[in-house]
Length: 112
Length: 113
Image (cartoon, rainbow over all chains, first blue to last red; front, side):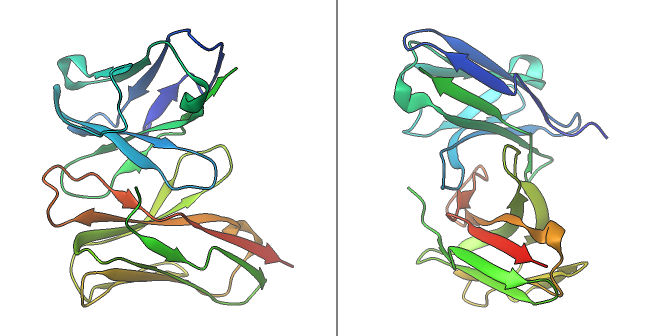
């Protein structure tokens, strides 16, 4: 059982640069979620995929953010023109349906 | 923003003691989940609850889905040092079609020998 994997685990970037994160869900899970977590808070929902279709996006997901899940397998989250306020832990979770969500280890983004 | 009120915010307990924490909301949920998160890692699912009144155990952990569907609690019995971490409640609103979770702000548990 490989679980949910995320790469990279840490990313330091300068303000204004673009970054891309990858999530590989548990293989039989058709639902994939992205969340963002800041220090001292619980995760906050960003977006949701069922197979390859992006079905919901949070208001937190500004137009600088884009996510894809080609072929319904792995997913990428891209942030363009990063800002210091984008510094956070970005978490990916997958689920086999209306059941519990299983999280990856996260990608810690620091924007300097 | 987060719709779940989780308490207490932190707990300092001695090894062997029991721990209780809870989550409340003004909204109705059809699923409650409890997670544990270690520093620098993602949350790990501990217990999932799907029916009002449901009481579920996982080893020394016991969680219940409140009858009103607006609350849940988690108990940890006979705490040990590896219970240290941040515990989060998460719920899925009955009005949500796609299953996204609302999270509490977490309960930090510190266990002293």
